[in-house]
Structures are given as C-alpha cells and as structure tokens.
Length: 172
Image (tube, rainbow, N blue to C red; front, side, top):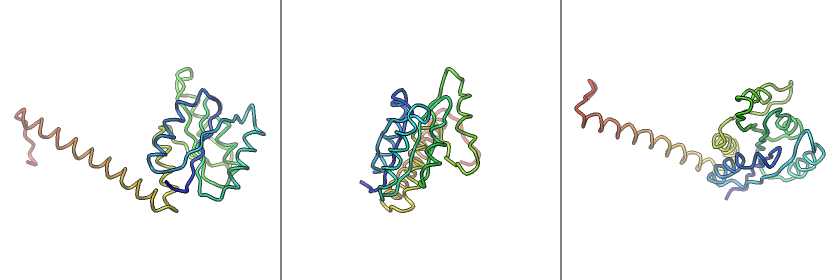
C-alpha cells in the first residue's frame, strides 16, 4: 500500500454509498483512504478541525468532497487546504442534475476539479498522487492497459461475430 492518502469528505451519511464507490476504486490503486463526514453549512468548525488534522499529516494527499444540492463543501475544503481537491457530487433525481452547477462555478482563487463519475474521481486522485509515488503510477498504468486490452478484445470479438454472419470489411 502507498503512503499516499485520499480523504473522502461527505456532507452527510446520505452520501455514503457514493463515497464507498470512490473508496473502492481508490483502494484498487493501493491508496490509503479515510472516509469522513462534515458539512460546510451545518458543521463548518468540525470540517476545519478535520482539515487542520489532515494538513498536519506529511503524506501526499488528495481530498475528494462529496456533497449535493448546494455544494459549498468543495469550495470550503479547497480554500482551507494546499492539496488538490476533487468535487464528486452525487447525482440528484430531484433536481434533474441541475444541482451540479453549484460544483462548477467557484469564486476566484478556489479551484476544485469536478469529476462526476465516482471511479473517475478516484482515478484522477491516483494520477495526481502517482506523480510522487511510483507504485501508484504503476497501478494507474496497469489499469489503463487493462482498459485498452478490453477495448481491443471487444473489437476483435465483434469483428469475429460479424464475419461469422458473412459480413466483411474492405480493410480485411
């Protein structure tokens, strides 16, 4: 396991299932993951206390914030830490996805990345942390190679099915 840390901070327990997807993907890259709960609206002092604690930890880290509706958490976290912050808001049926706009526009000097897919938020964190950790970088490269192999395998299988049906391509 890497020394690198991913801190997943959710606005409420309602976000836990979404956060578990991120955590599972991050752990697949060998990253240490901490899940925490804190609300920028309801418990700002608690959030600041958590961030102060993590900022004292010398390990390389990325914060992933998960909050829906009015996502103040991502900007709040980003303004309080020097490490990268990734906002990964959960999709909301109630708002038809419109609440994601609160994650997209931030005031000047506040710059969390926004990634909507939980596994991709973990991948971005791994790529960032892989800059300083060769083991994480190797895990990212292996993941990407596996993704490429699957596409090539799927293409080969599809071409074979088409040929078995009697369809041929000019390139053959």
